[in-house]
Image (cartoon, rainbow, N blue to C red; front, side, top):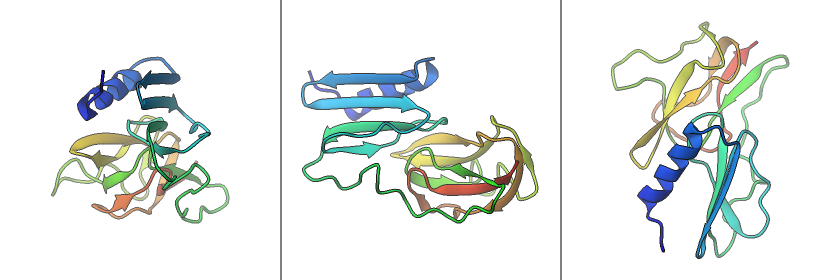
Length: 161
């Protein structure tokens, strides 16, 4: 039995909507590990890829011939001022600050946010995933460029709690 890309995305959506914090599936050569919250430390040569909405899960899929990225290779982080928090990308993809071109942005500098406030969208393979603030405070800086590529864990916004 093989899983298609649509099958994997459907599984991820089901896990994201569930109350599970951790899920692991092995089908033949394919191994999928999903964790809500902190990334799972990877052993072996699996390449981490994140796909879902907040909180940020980590997904390991198909063994890579050589590890192109590992959990130790974090993206370059924007400097976070003392006493401030970062809203980071829960997965890699194209980042958008508004729901559609020409629409007002989800959040602006100076705006109050809560843990559940949608701050932006990340598009991966024509699937849009919302980015939730995950913290309560005031947006002090928008770090990521609208329409730009972001990596898993990259700072998108800086929030003053």
